[in-house]
Amino acid sequence: MIYKSGSAKAAFVSAAALFLFFPALNAAAARLKRPDPLEALRKSLEGPTVPYQGEVKIQNHARQSRERSSVTMNVFWAGNSHYRREITDKSGNTRQIIVADGQSEWIYDPEGRKAWKGPIPADSRGEIESELRLISANYAVKISPGRRIAGRRTWLLEFKSRATGALVRRLWLDREYWLSLESELFRPNRKVGSSMRFASVSFNPQLPKTLFAFQPPAGWQIIPRLAPREVSAQGGSPASGGRALPAWLPSGYAFESEDALRGGKDPVWHDRFSDGINVLSLFQCSDEVQLNFGTTGAEPVQMASTHAKLAWTQDGLVLSWSRGGRRFVLIGPLDLAAIERVAESIP
Image (cartoon, rainbow, N blue to C red):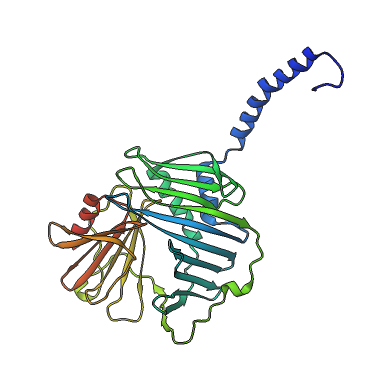
């Protein structure tokens, strides 16, 4: 009963009034509370301010078939450069473990009995403003209530290209801590290229310090990873040990950053170009250096100027070729025509 006294008719009328007016008030309140989409994205890029752990399912969808490669990642994050990621394949075999103890980052491969030790990647929060400007220039971003993921309420962010109107990416952000709980990245053919989803997540767990300590087993090969050095964006002649940069990039892409591994006469150069969401990476080095990006599939393709190989990862297509004693690898979520055009523009 609505009232302790009074007629049934009064109770019915009062219930009807609640039904008619309260949904409207609640909808208005929800609209007022809906965050600005770029501000929500900013909070997500900054990352949670509390420790968390979870199980993440990651899928990469093959380019020309229904084939999917999938891995599971158990992640533990305690802040202050303390984290651990354990990656297993669909058979439950551990493929890679990444551990940071606040001072160094270890990446080790149980199957290969190798471990790489190097500096923890630099904090990228200082680049958030430039990323947001690129996103705003290239994408229309919409926010709406999202579905529950791992038992958590979410906001759904959808990114559509301002040039084509195509849906490029979807993110589901935790409403309390802004962690990205699910993402879908679409290929130019408008099909999902890769996705990740938290199957479970908990915030403020008690994480033992032993999680972030790594001691390689006896007999393992320990390989030092050198700190990257900043290099000029002007590039240089490949023949002189410098790097070549593409003369053409897709609309909206801009040079983002570059680095090189110190210590060798002929370092591996890595240049990154971004439109705020998607990243196009260019690697180049001596033809004697072998680069392994964990690609799926491989097929020969004929470019205008040379032969190349095409494969794919969760980050997009992987186009690799050699010319003049140099090896080049392009990785990005472009269609084949676009990534070939970038490749052909590299001198």
